[in-house]
Image (cartoon, rainbow, N blue to C red; front, side, top):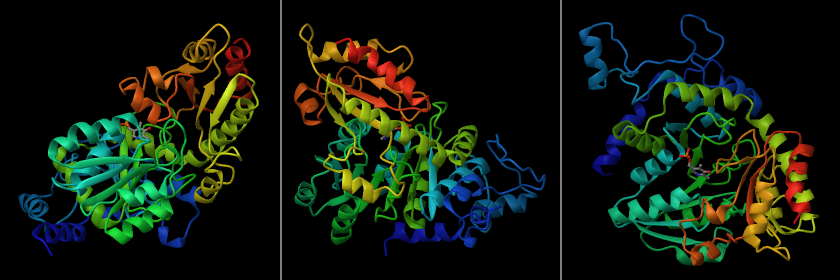
Length: 424
Ligand SMILES: *Cc1c(COP(=O)(O)O)cnc(C)c1O
């Protein structure tokens, strides 16, 4: 056992007992919605019913000796909110329970979680094998910064199992994917990837941002670490930034020491927003998915739409895989891409812009996972920095529109899209 592993194992034993001290006794095998509403709260002596926000940067000790014991490791407990904070712990505890993980580590943003993953599990000379279909900033982080620290990075199509297997190298340490992916809602076979990783001593890391634990629990499917941009559906109302990693104790301890040392910590207020967001996550996701299924049905039948990328459609190549991987019946997420046909007078980019500009209600923005429906033209915004060839490889055509279907009345969402589609 290496020096650093011995150190990490010692830290796992020293986990603050409050981490396990929960107002809800998880051993009683509660359902997921009960966990979402109640897990993770550590009530104070004040007996508060709702979760408190602990806006404090530091903590006091009962004596000089007590302070010393906290620092020399004899005692556990809070010492500084860059390390631990009760509000952040409540969010971590609740999310961990929902993802069926031993522990979660909260971060300042989704990208903070992905950076933490890189710093915790990769070192110079290692190989990171990732999906071609990723959130743009994840690719930027891998290419611009991991490469700078001599981590080798390569990409394969997320749905191509053979390509994944062929791309594994002796120094591959992490396989990284999103499912469903952005912006074409492609699906990875997480069970297959898990077997590939286990056979080769690789960590499987899955960004579960688009599905959330309401639809899919990657750890149950064999992933080692789940990544979240809590900014999206966990909040669900586009208010604050945050992220998290979820997994086994040892891997999370490695992530925790990165967050603590690097200051990638979540703020207590944001943690509180996410904790309250988790209470309604499943109900919101059900409504998001129902709306999305109806919007996809409308789009696929519209004469001016040439393609709809959404695994909820029965002829989507990954429809069966998504049905198997998602535990919510009829739940395929609420993000889809669709391609607008060029008209006699306009090319496909102009046609897509016409559809976007004809909306009166949906928000023209690059955010997603919000109660408000959002619409984006990826080729000229989120994927603008890619070369034409890279865009083509990512399937981002000029006529492609990305839609994050919100919680408005679905008839109104459809009417808003029809304004431009009908007048092309
Ligand atoms: C938004 C997003 C991220 C990054 O999260 P931030 O909170 O914006 O840093 C990572 N992955 C996916 C899939 C996302 O949509």
